[in-house]
Length: 351
Image (cartoon, rainbow, N blue to C red; front, side, top):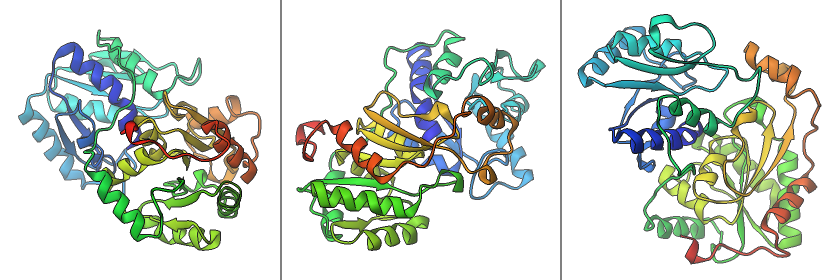
């Protein structure tokens, strides 16, 4: 989901430059965000075996996908990847479907699989933010935009629903509250539970915040435990908000504290300041064009990726060990980011 959000400015550039209809081929994990990205007209959802997903399609369904793509008669395919991914499986699908123009970064020579090949020099020569990477990819075929911000659109009427759910969970949305997003999709990005609790208690005791622990439905047990250990003025809302409501919740919050996951990019897309507890995995995925504080920490060697491109990052980019941030660092980052002596909610004019 975060990757798709970060590709939105490049998709916007394609749409503005070529006045084209945009269909995204994406996974079930990212599909729910599609209706909130105005530049996307349609989506095809397949959990392909080279993309992280809960389930993948059976091998014969790949041929079904090829036939569906053929029937749609697309004029071109743009393949967005992070620098540690290989675009050629997706390029092969596009080639088999007869899509005449195929654009991607690629480290090796793709020969006929790509009609428009941009040699991939990341991360060995430099590392760009993912938004910049995607924008420069489409710029290679003449697509550009002056609007490089991330944007997600949801109906303002959802705010009343979100406020009601907060009130039902003993959170007063009229009093200061902030979000702690502790849920992770990968063990290596996890921030210690005891430090979440310590930081939450400090913010409650000193500044009077109410703390919402957010996460997916699968992370409810973890968030419930964090809220229970934190005590008064804290609440778990994991799994309570479907994606449109969750986006509104993030938009309403004066600040979000999160591990580096899709929530960070949602915050950037609704202009909510964010403190990121940033596991040293993907240096190109920091918050884009939004006030932020990034608190890095190293990944335990046992949890590091076996991908040789990521291994290069550990040897070159992340050579200096970064200890796990203390709870006080979170508190200080929140206060510095807000620039206020005491917490203040976003005013209605911000919606």
